[in-house]
Length: 212
Image: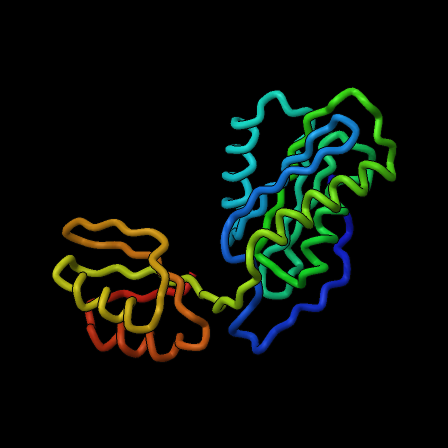
């Protein structure tokens, strides 16, 4: 199930930074015999979301619900929520509301529910999903991160050391790497330093640089 985006005002210092959680966290909340396990993850893509959701479904195959919400991107417009069979609006929307209350993006929270046999009703479910999510988010600090723009680099293996010196010098993040006689590298370049990185890489000549 998907819901309309809620209004979100992000605490941007400038367009080259955003706020997210520092690391994954897990919290447990129990209510009337039901157990809610909340997992919070910093993510960068929909692929990250799919990976974590599948991992949790394998880890908790007997859970009756795997409800989630995520928000991606600098403006927060890329989002999704799911009630996964719970009454409409009782789970995914509540998880997203807790993410938004901390004004963070690039965050996924999955709440896994084990049913204990006592009906909670709509108010009880709303409170449980909100509380479990809030507990998980409280366990991981909110940090400021640089916006990264992805680039692919292609070059001869003899240029590897020169390329990696530039990558480290400007705080770029290596995302994918294939090293043979002819190398392919996908990197995340801090938005504030794109011009410097492009200039340095083009100085090496024979290095093909392309923004993704």
